[in-house]
Image 1 (cartoon, rainbow, N blue to C red):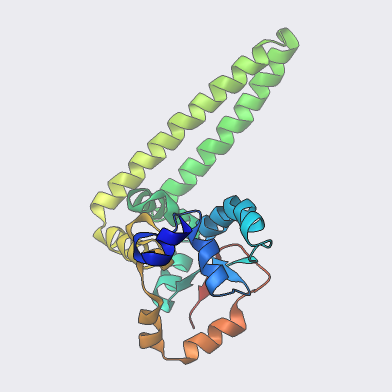
Image 2 (cartoon, one colour; image 1 turned 180 degrees about the vertical axis):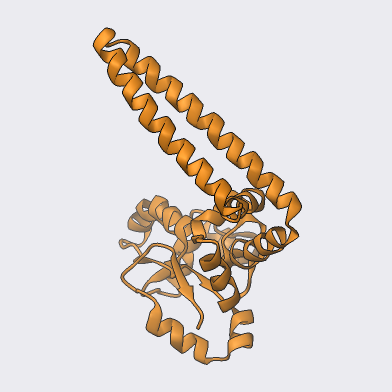
Length: 224
């Protein structure tokens, strides 16, 4: 086998488990920075590293963030949204925005209805418990069903508002395209060089000053 490799090395290549080990043997690596999937992958090949190299290349999670431009930030604040609100997809986002732009009197009615339902069912549950303790759970289940139906009615009202107000659709689509394009994290769909081209190299300096290097979670950074 060694003779064949020596005479015709182009016919041989490392497989998916062996490739990083060969790579780090030929080009010794101080540390490897990778995404979540890569970090998990290296954890699996650690035993191969130990067996062949006698060491494991240190793995560091790479910086992960969503950059929020001023226009997107204004929309987030206007509709009281967070980045996680976008993770349910554009259609759900449109409903969320619509629910928060319903006529104020209708929003108050829904809020009052929820409060009244909880208060009434709490009294019913307390009385039923004195009559038969096993009925308390039945009352709780009934309450959850009523809350679900009320939430469904509010969602239908929100969908009606979406159909009536095209601005909501435009704003929701704008936010989705900028912060959660194609239902994926921004960093996977939009090249960072585009932000540098738009805001200049000082953007990188601002990022270096803003990021929390001790935080391995996804960060949300506003571009001033």
